[in-house]
Image (cartoon, rainbow, N blue to C red; front, side, top):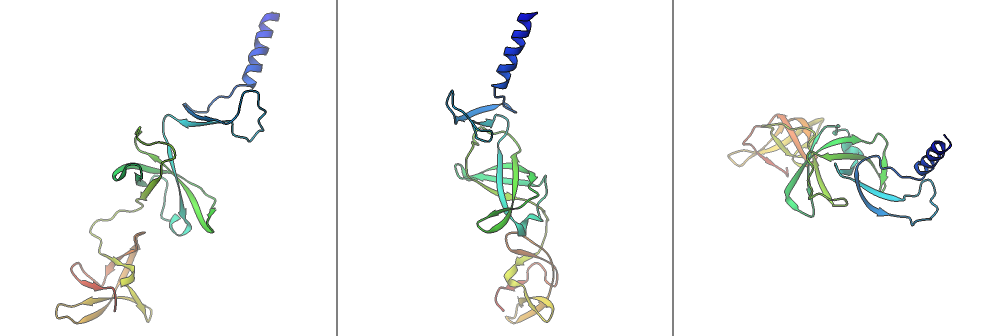
Amino acid sequence: MYKRQAVERIRAEIAKRSLRAPFPGVVTSVEVQVGEVVSVNDPAVSLISNNELQIESFVPEINISYLSVGDPASITLDAYGEDVPFAARVVAIDPAETIRDGVTTYRVTLNLDTLDERVRSGMTANIIITTDRREGVLSVPQGAVKEAGGRQYVTVLLPDGTREERTVTLGSISSFGEVEILSGAVAGDTILLTP
């Protein structure tokens, strides 16, 4: 009986001094030496998951309203160039802001759709998140739309070389600076950027 209690006590002592990872992975660095005293919040070991790497990005406040968890994304890595895209998906959007360079941003976390051993920790990622996709949309650069007298209009170059101002109804604006034209212009019209 005494030996069993001694063994249980030793096991409990070992458990107190053991570090257990919350997920399977690979140790990437050990920050402490054997016998060193470590404070509660000091990092001791860095670990990377075997299963999936996450990509973090900070989205400016003006664009955060367009994003939702589940939105698809295309990621390119500087290591492989623009011709090698990786499919990903938004898995989390922080509810609280993060100030970066004086700008209010929100941390967005993405997961790759499939594991790829070419993707490594610390690589620089370029991200395009698709928040909405529409086919057959007529759009023009935002700079082509003018406003005067409470109406929005575009200047159309007519076949005879004259110009005509047409009142337009606008739809969505893309992050690339294109604005959707719902009415007032048709496919094939020559829209001028300058009046």
